[in-house]
Structures are given as structure tokens and as C-alpha cells.
Image 1 (cartoon, rainbow, N blue to C red):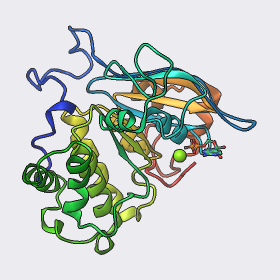
Image 2: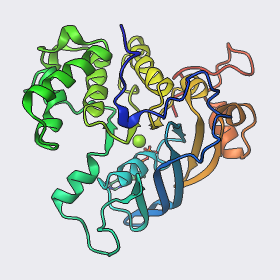
Image 3: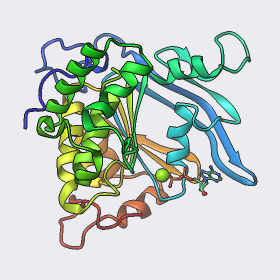
Image 4: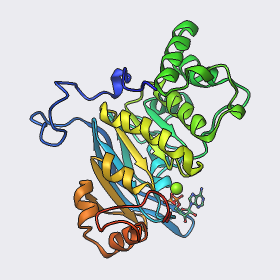
Length: 296
Ligand SMILES: Nc1ncnc2c1ncn2[C@@H]1O[C@H](COP(=O)(O)OP(=O)(O)O)[C@@H](O)[C@H]1O
Ligand SMILES: [Mg+2]
């Protein structure tokens, strides 16, 4: 499988000699892709998000961790206005989401669709169109949201499917694919919009354990090639290896944000310590982390 080439340019970090170390390379100020400021969200009496602020720079892979129910999915859904925050602002590449710039007027559906096109979302349960082939699934949004010519959309979709190792499945229907293959289609479909940022909500947690690796490998290659990503995951080993930063949430708040070696090596808060203890495999050394056996 060749997935090392040709990430869409819009999700590439400026590639000035890829030998530069990721952390120390920033002599120019990092470009902000996602800026969340003071996001709060309640469902009735349930205060799900409490004043969450988060900045994601171009080329960062942020792994968003936290116990089940702490608000991770709601936070991702607030980014693309699938949930409307009660308070706070979302900016993607400097542009306000959901509300017209310089006003308090809500975006209409067409404006929202244009804003959402800059965000690639990969869901736990794939959300593929069952009546469309794999190729058609990947072409759909570029054709109908971006208005790309059919030939161009088809060529690009085929290239992306090759990139995720699914060139042979282009004409298959989703029902004929394994879960891992479906999720790789989901990633190709998100990439087809050339988004500024990719959001993943537990992309492997619905998969047979045998199929998790093929999806994580695609995500790992995207990270290496400089895609900007926020990944909600319970794959601790993956997060430890791939994250440029770990953001830990509990009860609707961000309570830690640290490089993975620091977060996994010396979590600062009792909540993070408890959370990580659940994932630590009894068979591994103190610095080893089980994959998904301790799903929170
Ligand atoms: N659409 C909704 N309506 C009512 N409650 C919701 C809705 N979405 C999420 N919640 C509640 O918000 C809380 C956080 O959920 P969620 O964001 O899915 O957490 P996580 O992804 O961290 O597991 C949970 O208590 C959940 O039941
Ligand atoms: Mg969730």
C-alpha cells in the first residue's frame, strides 16, 4: 500500500526540508488553523462543555483524550456547527464558523455548507452512502458542494483511494467492504474536500481489533506528512506515538494539554492519572500502553 504521496496541499505543513525536527523547527510563528474560545454547551441541565478554549496550529496532530461522556464528541460537533454552542466562538483558518463575520447574524445553510467544507470529519460509524459505490462516495461532496467538474472529481477520488490502499475497491458498494476498508473510504472522502483540518471521532472504536491497524496507519502517514488533525481516540499507544500534543478533557473542561511524552510520562492531574491507569496493561512495562483493551 502506497500512502506516502500527495496529501492535498491545503493540509500540508510548509515542507521546508522534512528532516527538520517537528518540535524545534518553528522559527516562524505557527499558523493557527482552529481556534476555539470559551465554548460552552448544555443539553437541558447537563452542562456538557464548560468554557473550552483550544488552539490547533497548522501541521499539529492533537489527540483529544478523556473518559466517555466528558464532551469530546460534542466539542468536535461544535467545531462544524453540528451542535451550536451556547457561548464561545469557533474560527477555522481565521474565519468565524456559524455566524457572519462582524455580526451576530447566523449563517444560512449555504454559508454553513461553505464553512464546513474546510473541515473534514471522520466518524466512528463511517456514514458512507450505501447506494453509492466507493468512488462515488468520495466524489459526492467535491461534485455537489464544491461544484467540481465530474472528470476532475473522479480523477482526484481515484487518486485518494489509491492513497488509502483501496484502488481495487473503487466500484464496490460499501456493504461489500470490511470496517477497516469503510473507514479508509471515510478518510479518502474527507480528504477529497482538501480541508484545512481533519476531525476524527473515535475512528477505530467500531472496528474489529484486527482492522484497527490499517486505519491507524493511514492516519499516521497523514500526521507524518503534516496534516492538521484533531483525533478523539482511545488508542493510547497511537496517541503516544503520533500526537504532537495531547489534550485531556474531563467533565466538559480541558484540564491538561501537553506533549505526549509529558502527558503519558507524568500526567499532572489526578483525573488524568486515573484515566491512564485504566489503559495500562498489566503485561507491559511502566512506560508501555495497551492499545484499546481498557476502553474508557
Ligand atoms: N444531542 C444530545 N442531546 C442530549 N444530550 C447529549 C447530546 N449529545 C451529547 N449529549 C450528552 O452530552 C454528554 C457528553 O457526550 P459526548 O460529547 O458524546 O461525550 P464523549 O464523546 O466524550 O463520550 C453526555 O452526557 C451525553 O449524554
Ligand atoms: Mg464521543
